[in-house]
Picture (spheres, rainbow, N blue to C red):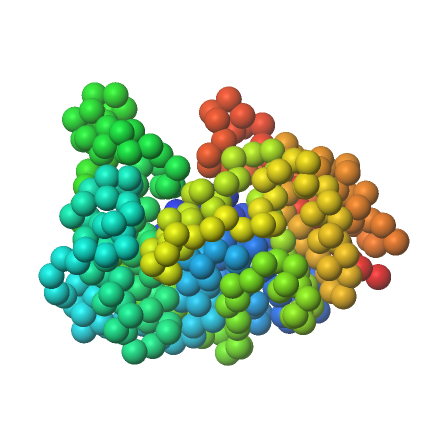
Length: 336
């Protein structure tokens, strides 16, 4: 078997470049780890590669599909017949055409997405469906300037104009105008090869963080919450993909960690819900709120041992003037 390799996900805030460093900090007696803000699953994937049993949870449905495809799934891949089925048939006027034509994609592109959504439902295995959603996600992201669904339509059209892009940025970005099918097929092999079995069972969950912490057992919990005070609107970035999966307008979730006024209360609540677990690994950022000292104080209450590590890490959507000032902080907590 080829060595498992995390595929291209394009997830804002992804920890792909430092996932190995984070996993290095896991205590030796950890056998099961819960990644409760799993996002693009880079940490979960690295933990799975290291032979651990992984629980990957995220409140966004599209992130849940990524976790089903790459973490819970041990051996199911998409074959040529599956892919041909997804891209068969005539264009369809459906949910995407009605709600998002000339909003994020052109009308014909939305008709294509409606057809593919209908065909994905015909796949005979939930992990095949999850892989298909993960690959359609990749295709939609590749066609979207800045890889997020918060860009006004006029700007989208402007940036997809290859001559404009070349004149302004020196790059035509032709991949924005390649078809969904092109991007899906181009990435198919990498996603199929990313599926592997480490001999353990895994879970992919789609719950609010407090709900999942109340209902799981694990030796360690890894937390990578949205960083309050930074560009962290994950529902805005990726909520469209949830709408696509459900064929209904997705609603923002409650515990989003975006509101500075609520952040401290949410972190205090997190600490309460983490008390049943022995080890906590908490990713954070040196410009987030509550600040480093406030969070360290919360984590150290009741005699808990807290170690703080740092590594340089660029947060992708931060403005140019701030990128080099950001450091990734990892709080290691032993709950004794």
